[in-house]
Length: 130
Image (tube, rainbow, N blue to C red; front, side, top):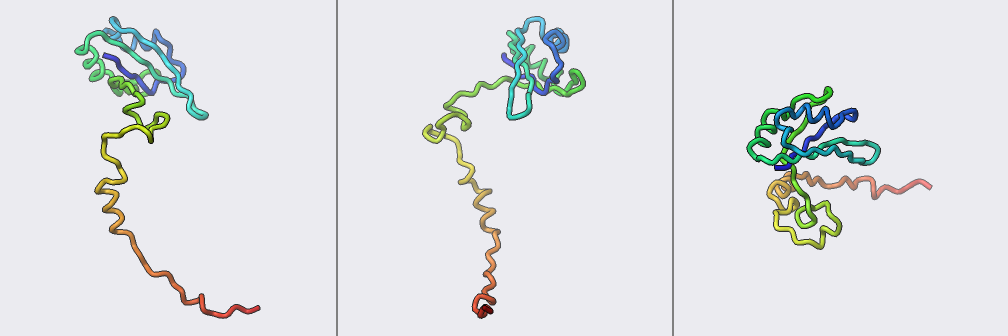
């Protein structure tokens, strides 16, 4: 099973992460990665653990623990492909089998409660000085 480890501090090294994983990381392949978004930089790790049972235990035990002073997020890694992600290029041309948010009940219900007060037109007929 592949795991995503997020919210890693900038100074974290691979051997520190291996030590953090402890016995779960003995049979794992690990890679630290960096994502630059606008002016900020985010660090995360991609871990491949052979046994699903061990990976699920690692998620349960290590999620929220602190690594170099920051609480770490651990979850199963999700692949994103162009056919299942709205953020891909030309996504408007792709078929989408899920419900559209703009057609949901919640959005339609909010339109019912909009106030429609008449506009005040009392001063439009007053002659202007000039």
